[in-house]
Image (tube, rainbow, N blue to C red; front, side, top):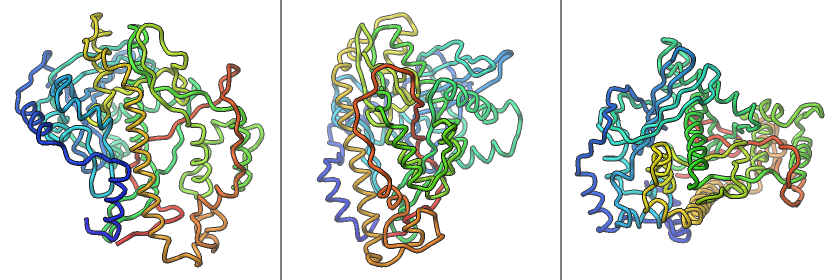
Length: 471
């Protein structure tokens, strides 16, 4: 990718210490692991699994199959068995601990594992035999979890779909008991359970830098329904994993504290500043669900609502669970377990879950890593977030530089293309006018406030506020 920003992007990578190429030792060990045939038992290649990922993805962590039972559903969820390829304490393992997670940047990325594993031997690519950690969930007719099983297995994915392809198949109807049709049915049931539990999902457009025909493009992208359904299967797995680890007495949980006092009132004042009607009788959850992410003022409101997401972290334990063991946005205990190709902690949590399900002690190497994992994941998360913010800021500044002192449609109003304003992004303009969030101590006890989380990376592209490209 030849762009005017390449030198600045390279400088950002160095400044933020984004990992570069793998050492010859790591690559040699990965090549050796990838060349060894692995055929775990049982043989579950007969399950017609499919994957749903962004277009062009090669690091495929998950594959699924859904079927209808007499009184509910069965969900099979295969996760890439990275531990089958990574020797504890070896060169690949040490490098993965140094990296923590995959970092995605324009034109390049810093993967957690060498591509020969993450995009090859360990990835659940279609029509390839792969070792996997296979979850089996039986749900009742309301989508509630009735039973959980997790063990190693040999699998073979049959189809690789991107989000738009999967969404098109769901919308086309097809057979009512096809896996994709059931994904829509089960996903909707799980979303309803999440609402009843006290959680809420923010359908917030993500501001992203992507490569367009003319160079780097800054866009907002909103999410298709199928991505939410797909996400619900991952959340189901993380919730089941947390239960297994809490019951067995060892693990690492993904946690988030309740919102601070005054958070909801802050958001009501923000809504007034954005000229969005929020009736006093309308609860927070219903208000957020009424917002249209395609409307600039509503998009700004949704992004402001993410302020309640602060404080997410990891908590390891052996014996007694941590004091803060719930993920407030989900209103339940939760663990990261479904992306071991891209996130370090998941490999360890899968080992602990399989041991808990089998009623045997976890491997010593997995237990030994527990104390250090939270800080390793927090550090890599900070680095990934800083890299993402820096790249967006850099491209946004480059796009707006020629317009300094000029006008941007809708810039003063946060209302799309209805008016002219000075050169300020629509969402940022509204945010600047909103009152500052009050500082207050974390909530101690009391009734549960409505919680929320942000969705994952959506597949389609919706231009909102500032847009443009850098050649």
